[in-house]
Length: 233
Image (cartoon, rainbow, N blue to C red; front, top):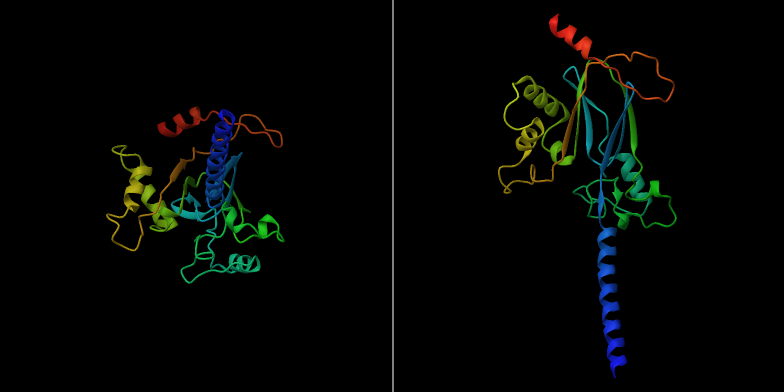
């Protein structure tokens, strides 16, 4: 009798664990993220992007896009989606779901066994762009589509420039940018209601290293003397 009760409890526990696992499995299958990554190697800025987040560099106040937004209605993206057996609806969504065409995860859209990963409806293959930094480059901003749906690349660069010129006071520039993009309420078309993430990186004035670096070696130089001289002049 005792053994039968124990077996029943074990079976119930196994069914419960199985249901919990299937729920987690479905959650993982339907989850994903965009990714934009920036790497500074010597004087080179290397940016890799998959999705509709964006990296923008300010070059003397002019916006330089370091990434390309991957949207389903774009010609190259649309051709890949259709070839993988998908479609793009009138509102620009893959199979009526995602409104972007490249992302990490989202395995629900990557189940065509006849195609490699980079040719699936939603691909994680990034575009890569390289920029040689110089003294004209002031800063870069990395942000998700919640920002770029509200402001253009140039508008964001102009906004950050204006805030940097002002005396340091109040909230950091990132928070001021988020507040600028946030919708006052949710009664509109959804603009300014999306999730928002933002990073601003200011570049130091270029200063050559005191010694020559070997190929592939990274290093930094102490620019304190040259900065002090610039201030005195």
